[in-house]
Length: 332
Ligand SMILES: Cc1cc2nc3c(=O)[nH]c(=O)nc-3n(C[C@H](O)[C@H](O)[C@H](O)COP(=O)(O)OP(=O)(O)OC[C@H]3O[C@@H](n4cnc5c(N)ncnc54)[C@H](O)[C@@H]3O)c2cc1C
Image (cartoon, rainbow, N blue to C red):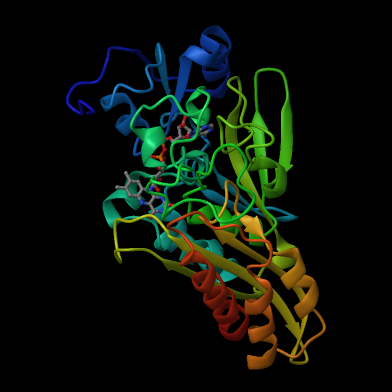
């Protein structure tokens, strides 16, 4: 039973600049917790499962929020809220896929405070893990969700390793489809990593869904202009229309020339620990005419290699249907 009443005490820091924030991260290491909108973080604290010694609130740091145009495309500050993304003219006008994904998250209240950085760095929503059980993801030596009698309808149908939790973000597959680059900074270095390396599976790290180091802050996300104004499609299926995580979602970016698909990037979310790109589908549809036949082919290929658990087999036809619709209905 989780006691969601009072948070354990921690030291709260509200740095005004990155230099100060890095100093705090270097000082506290794994005992420090970065705070953005708090929608995921406060749940953990109230449940007393994550007990950081210091919480470093990033929201007062100048320059971490907002969208700006660059020579290469656009750069989005990691502290930009999901609501701001949805109504930003650059994002809506050129990368509608991301705006649509942001608009599909949770509820207006959560989108008003939840940030793009926090959304793609949020922890897994496996209920065993979030109940504080000592599973692999929590540093233990078992996966409770994988057991035959377990409730695992929300869990992975692809590439499950020791842990079968999925990445629950609606924004993550849109970033994978848009070939986004994440900018990670520490007191010593800056590195820029693509979505394929930013999101990590259990074979890389069973305790985290991303590669952000304890000393690093995700400062921004870059979208290359190569995909600006492409044909886009985002759809999410959840148990409830609002305030609910995806059972499966799909994000597609297609560039179309003369009625044919010239380039394609498609990713599905909530089916594995990472937003899952579909390279076999992408390769099969490039060079084909956009339309029903190509869409059906895409849907058929979308679930190859799937390994459902006891209660999540429904995700296979769902994924196939969403990918079919994404290829058929993507629009500029
Ligand atoms: C009831 C409910 C329903 C939800 N439904 C959905 C949904 O349908 N779809 C969906 O995609 N999401 C959903 N969410 C998650 C929500 O979208 C939040 O945006 C997200 O969990 C966290 O964003 P935040 O800014 O509040 O981050 P926080 O809670 O502040 O942080 C989340 C994590 O990210 C880390 N972090 C945050 N910012 C940075 C940074 N700049 N650099 C490094 N690390 C950072 C924090 O340390 C923490 O580990 C839901 C959440 C709730 C509570």
